[in-house]
Length: 257
Image (cartoon, rainbow, N blue to C red; front, top):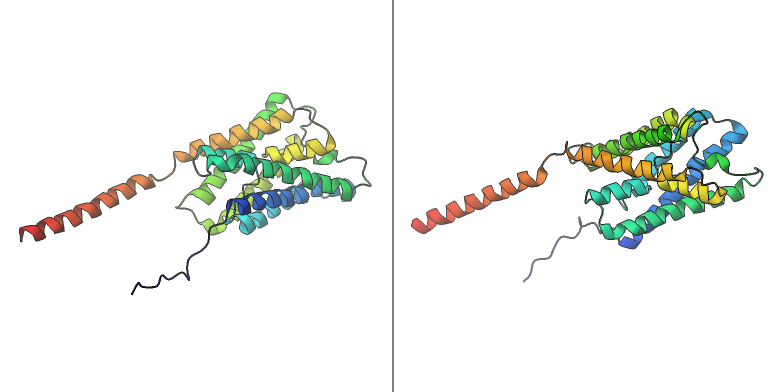
């Protein structure tokens, strides 16, 4: 009789469709809450501290809600960096990015309807302040995205880290970045976060900065963190080779006996 397999502890992996839906809905919620705070600030003055807290707490909640489904990227720069690092299959990338941009755009369209008493949705658009040059804005976005992605790599993808606190570490980092760079560049760190509001507000000035800089920052952080990773596969190969040697030696000794 064939023994029954214990399936009580087997967890079904999320499907491709579920991953895409998670990225679409997750990005929608992130942009709706974060950009909604910017529009509320126009009426009620949340201040940059309040807006930063909103962004950070929202991301924390979404990571714990969707991290086990799609990874909770919610950001094309993160998805591209993970694809280059072979943590996201290349075939998933186009739909991940498309769903993130669509979610952001739909969120901003919703905000436009809900805040129809305001003349426009320009507070949701990422723009840098007047004294800042293109080069400075590019560097700001590169650096803060680098910091965010560096934390993501260490807290969420390294087997040696405490995964239970990953969401908190990433959300707090986002809040700090918004607090510091928000008044200067809008602290995008996310091409979808900038593209959605730009489409709805029909304001595309310097949009290239908010697309290219975050991507380069995220990719650079992933490459740098790869230097800090434990060569896990190499250790596994050595361990397997040792087991093979033990088995072979035992078989050889038995055959002699």
